[in-house]
Length: 117
Length: 283
Image (tube, rainbow over all chains, first blue to last red; front, side):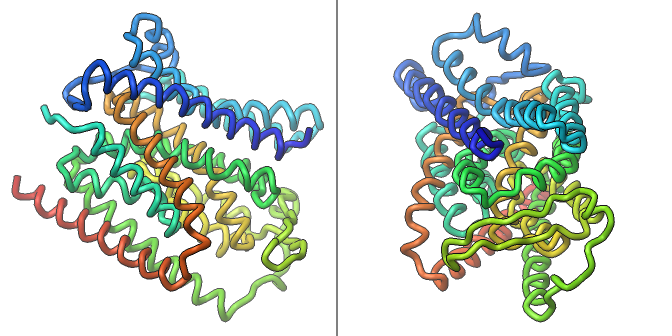
């Protein structure tokens, strides 16, 4: 499989899968809480890992929405990892290093290491 | 604290996605001014819209990547710069007062439109394809080709001035990360005017890059507590569905209609953000 087909598949699977979880989460939210949203409720996670860990203790709509959003947010990350492996396999040093740089920067970001406030 | 209706957010996100897709302005840059217009806090809107940007980018770029119109190699080179810009932009937003952000939003759109207009005019009279390829761009080797269906032929192209175009993408990343938008039109203009990419390759590659910038910036917003999963989910769903409907409607609308719509929405967005900025000075 070539790189373009692979990346296209990752994007389409990522967005469809995430939207399925989001639709389910929003439907359950409306059913259980009504359509009102209180902006005073704060969801603060130092990084994506702690958000993912908290999914276990969340109620059902929070769980579904969190899974959907995490899949969505991580789709570009998975695409970067796939590209890195593809370039590494094809011995393309230049683009292996470019994608490695992107992965490192994104990993720092996902782990909350760039959080300053 | 303010209470909002989920239905309102869904409807606004849908129309923003629809209009963003029709005009090429992008859903988030229309959604944020519409939301602040009904009293939604600016920083909450920017942070949650950043996540919806990932959805619209992934949804709309998948087909162009598969059809080989997008240049993934050029995207991977340019992403190194936009993700840095995206993170810096998100941090800037966290420390900047909302009043300044309203003016920054409006100023960015004015500047982007003037720059795009100037570059479009310049390119009409100056075709730079005869310019010699610089060493860095040759070393990078991100040239490519794609099949243009409207012209029914394969178009080959080379990428030029990559040493300037790359760092310029940091500015695009800062704008995207700080305003919670894709800044796709700005990225496209940079790729067309500096890297000399054909318009279709530039716009689809820009769309592809947007998701990566969105990821980098949204992690900063998540850790700041501005992201609410219900709001972010509704925005992502609404803009993606609106974008899908918009892409179906686009072939049925005349170019004149699209231009009028684009101009009207741009003026609305600029006026709305300037008005909110001025109004916030008195609060």
